[in-house]
Image (cartoon, rainbow, N blue to C red):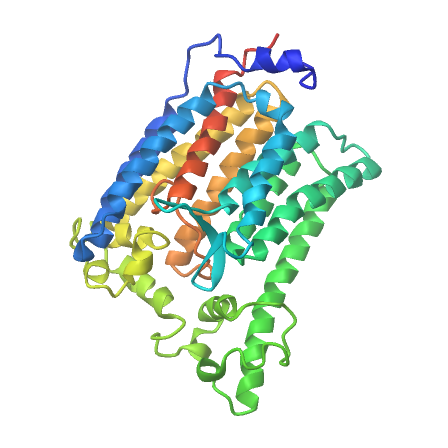
Length: 413
């Protein structure tokens, strides 16, 4: 199919001749959404918060978006990918403009529309997904020269939004993009040597970040300074290799060296230590819905309990079995995404389904891992459970694309 011809746009932009829908993912997403609403309510019960009501509204709009995107042949987006990509970058640029972007928590990541705030980095995920699929569809990766040509295009297309998002700064939205792109490269049969080299570079970078942060603390201690009192004093003059912000370095150190920077667990490692206590106190069956003392009494900070640390609330109130139920629902979504990718009849469908599935897998793994102390705290939300309008809508749109891959998998002419 020649998607560059205008007449093809209309032929692709039509309802599927097949009426079947994949029901596994929608039911799993519906179940996750119910868990999210229930535990957002529970986390905010002591302060009579109403974010659970807003979450219902976001999910309602998201459901319409999900079914609307599902009704459009996914191949249509390939014909307008440059417009989608450019449109996804415009708000990422605008949020950096003083007076347009709203600064919160020392970061300029939101555009305020009065009734709601919009986070532009969510549109970047959609743009990066589609432009990556487009580049790989139209590129050959057989020889080294061909692979380098495709990688060069990807580096520019993916690196641009990543750089703009880092300027906000919003590291959490950046780190979910490379795994998605690498997964799409993998199913495109890029040379295995590339992935070996990339893995080595990643391990080296992680080691450098941890070592750089620990050296920063040791440098201050060797000169009689306290990291907690004097953090940031050597930001431009100390032995730092990486341009990390203080809050980013704090999160890394709270994970890598909590005994140095916060031995009592009441400073930079407070959220980290309270999350471990919250998860561990749930036991097998939990304390009961709305009965979790850590969340209800505010030991798990209320500012993050309903979004970044919502899984901790679930673990405390519904225990290991409740946590396992949530993981099971996510597992259905992931495995079904892989199944749909395998059933796709073209590379585009496979790339979209794999890209979305890996993106969700990264969100789920990193969010849950940070609540149980396996990775540093990053602030990555949990799909369909954490509170957040922009995130909910982007998740619904992305899953709608996967549903479209399933519905139109046999509609080839």
